Each structure stands twice: as C-alpha cells, then as structure tokens.
Image (cartoon, rainbow, N blue to C red; front, side, top):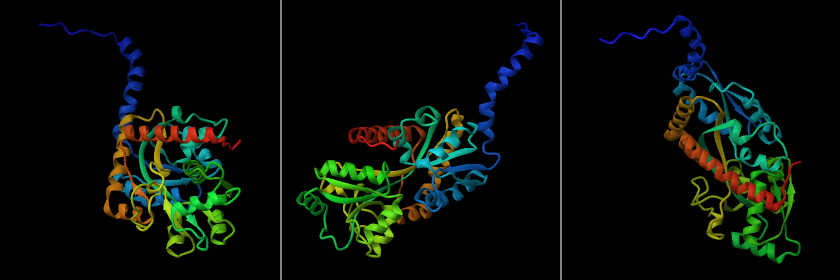
Amino acid sequence: VMTPTRIPRRALLGAAPALALALAPAARAETWPSRPIRLVVPYPPGGGSDTMARIIYPRVAERLGQPIVIDNRGGATGTIGEAAVVQAPADGYTVLHDAAAMGVNPALFRSLPFDVDRDFTPVTLVVTFPNLLLAHPDVPVRTVADVIAMAKAKPGGVDWASSGNGSNQHLSMVLFARAAGITVNHIPYRGGGPAIADVIAGNVPFVFGAASGQTGHVLAGRVRAIGHTGAGRLAALPDVPPIADTLPGFEALDWQGVFVRSGTPRPIVERLSAEIGAALREPAIRERMLSFAAEPRPMTPDEFAAFFAAERRKWTSLIREANITLE
C-alpha cells in the first residue's frame, strides 16, 4: 500500500498564485465570450472595411452569443486604430478588422508606436478583392494592351490618379507601370472618392479603384473598366478580364482580415477564426460579398499568418525599390 505524499500547507499556499496564473488563460478561453466584443475598424464609417464589417459581424455575434460593437477609429492609414488594439488587454474582447494597409505601413512609415509582427496575432483572412483599371469613357482604349500602347506612345507618359500615396491603389499603379514598362505621372488624392470623381469628370484619364467601391460607377457607364488586378472573372463584372491575361503573373489584391493582440489565448483565436469562417461560408453572406466584387476567403490562423507574411514581403520590396514614403 502506498503512503500518500503530504504537501505542507505553506507550500500549497505559496504555489496558489502561480497555479492561478497558469490556469487563467484556459479558464478565460473556456468561458469566452461572456460579454460584448469591441471590433475596431481603423477606418471611417462608410468605407470598404466598415461596409464589410457590418455585413459579417451581426452573424458572427449570433454565433458567439454576444454582441459585437463596431468602433471606427479612422486616421493615419489605420495606425490609430491599430495602436488602440495594442493598448487593450489580450483577452479576445478587443478585435481588429483591418485591411491591406496594415501590411505596408511598416515600410511606409519610419516609425510606428507598435511592431506589427510582435504585437498582433493573425486570426483569419476575411475577403480579397481586386482593383479595377478604370478609364474615362472618352479615352480611346478598350484593352490593357491599348492602355500600354497609349502610354508608350505619349511623350512623358500618361497621368494616373490614385487614392493617396502608399495606398493599395497607388501600389497597384506602380506595380502595373513596372510590369508594363510604361511611364505614369502619379496624381495622388485624399481618398478614392475624390480620385474617381476627377476621372469621371474627365480631368484625369486613368485610376485604379477598389472593385468593391467602384463597380456601381462601371455599371452606370461613368467609367470604363479595362481590367482587374485579380484572377479569373468577377461575378459582379464578368466581362472585365484580369490584367494577368496580358501581363502574366500580375496580381495586386486588396484584402481585409482579422487580428487580435499578441498573447490572446490560442483557443480564443481559433474559435474566433472558426466562427468568422462559418459566417463567411453562409450562402446569404457569400452572395452579398460577391455583389461587391469581394471574394470571401476564410483561413485558419496559421494560413492567414503565412498569407500576411507573403503580402508584407511583396509590397515592402516594391515600396523600397520605388522609394515610396509617407514621412
């Protein structure tokens, strides 16, 4: 018969705090969520990220059994909202719904109040969507080859609007110009709205615009869509070919994804990823996304981490080669 081992009461009391700390993340993960979740969207209301968030998260909230409150923290190309998430507890109750800018900001700014790789944990990709190569209807081009030929034939190149220095649309323009071997004169605007407005007015011939926001202008005939920066055909604009048909391998996707502060318990990260993915796979939500030319692409946390790292490498290389900075 084995004699029970006696542990002094003082030793048990001394071990209690350490035991509580060890068990705390597991306990939090098991009960999460037990109160409302704050979803930080680091862009203004009405923009692409905000629009997608308001489609997706009511359903995610139902699945989780707790409200999800959207907190728009716009400014400084997303870095203000990102900083707010870093300052919150790593408990799964503050979640970041961000966009492709998060991956390029570290290359555009000399300093940020956080480290993207150290301070955030990827949860899931939500959607990807291409940019549209748009032209004023009076510009005599119909194909990507026409645009390239026009640019090469014009001394000094062609004028090209963008939604701002360092934006995904600006970077798409730089990537396109390099792949096509053409010269473009970049005209940055304060956002996609003013840029597309000047193209519609005929003041600038070309712009790359987010498909999720500019499809309506194309269908109304205000601008002509020459090509898009993704692959295959778009459900919302099936007649618009990918630029890759003319420039093989060309791709410049905008995207939205979810992050939490590093240190958030892994079971919370995995459950949040799974519930968002389940919502994105529901036919009604998927069809709504496709109507915005956005493709739902849920991923596991590890898959999204790999995607995010690859996007960072791609755009950081281009930004440095083109010497693009915001400071």
